[in-house]
Length: 300
Image (cartoon, rainbow, N blue to C red; front, side, top):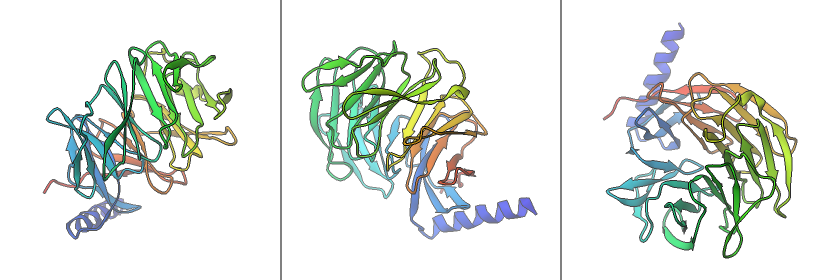
């Protein structure tokens, strides 16, 4: 009976794709990574045809992505439209703003900010002399706050015309600006804690994420915030313990993943897509913290 129901859900989702049912977001699956739209409704969804493969960054909201295309950078929308970003390098590290309206690109020397997403992407600012060997990057929706973490775990803030270190923000693995605010979450995998950076620059303990395990500061932590800025999700790369952090209360809920995580992206309706190299599908965490697997449909 369970097999019959699973098959029925899969077939229904495939027919939805064939009939042109609108996407409800996107997810990253497999290795090498493939970007696919999520077709169908909750409980009967499937990943559609590959939109991009190789090097790309999916935006929060899952409606578009920054894609490397023959050495140039393109913004590719799940609806099919593509727009080249003139004057922007593909970079070695990229991060979208919390709702996907801006993109920060690190090329090893500078951080370039692209605005006007997704319809009219254009370079709006270049932040020079960035710290070396950045491993995490985040910016606010208005582009006024840009944060970066280097390979030593030191955290920096762009302050008008220079980068300045944030006192007390050490051994940091990842940083994420929240919603439309100038607040941010900083997570240390090695110390097992999460800090909250307030808009006035003060830093406070937010939550313990000890179940993330003990990681060296060089190890990567995947960190994403919900579109409204009320939640932050953290998981060690290739880890299976997902920490869901409530920003206002500091409460942490742990969700056990079925495979090691390779990417984590906020979606619509307080959902998050979680990709892994263990399967060609992806996992969806809904607003009720239920985890469901989304299989990949056969390619057309």
